Length: 383
Image (tube, rainbow, N blue to C red; front, side, top):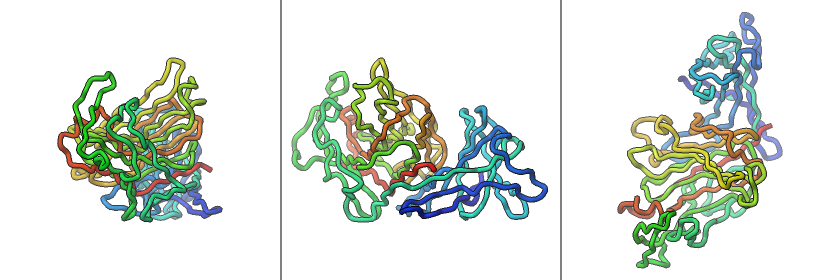
């Protein structure tokens, strides 16, 4: 697939950044007007959520995405993206729909182009969508911004299967334009060991006490697109995460609409023969807590080349959250979608590198500290 020019207009409104797609018109005299849905495909603009690379980079330089969908959903449909070249419409990309009937185009380049998408040569549909950048952090200073973030999990937590680790500001650092979250030995308990246990109470051995980098946003979000550009830790024995959590007690509710949900946008469990990248949702139901999600299928297909890996380069992980569903994307490409456990409650963002007790036997002598780096975080609302 080719990477076409970006079809965006940027307008500052009250300190926020609004992103508006340029909608396709009739094109040249020989071209029919674009249709909203007569072709059986709709297309919408998403914010700049594609930016793979080895180094920190400005979030303003990320690439936007055009998300297209067939109605009804149909797998294997070839979609064509066209750009208005002035004298007519020029094909700039093709993609095949997945099982959900969707396909994504990464859009780079100019901000004044118009685009349209068609399915199997049918009538084209215009690209539309408006997003407002509500908040973001590029970690440009030398300390965590207390107006945006706070530290979590400051106590050893056997009930949460972290008897041997706790969150600490000492495992968090901001420098070089990135947030570093570490798993490291607790210096206050150096020389001591902790008995790690599985959920069934089985002993897993004794390990040094650890500190974890574990921070959450002070602001609450509901719906929109939230993205984080992350380079994960290499070793197993801990997992890096970008997730959402409700302030409500799930045990007091019977559904996600009223009680919220834990939305694990992405979790990475360290390098292995498998991809070790996952997305989950945990939510209240009449029968107790329910779980949806799994390992991301063939996650390595989202890597840039054979030398890339989740701990070698930064990748943008994004959640599109509507009233009806969650869509997880990696550098703009859809990785997972579900309409189960959709929260209707405001939630806060969590960034963490946690060494849960059940993971410790997997460390296998890997050196500490292990580090997860976050280049930037942004949230956009629609409209």
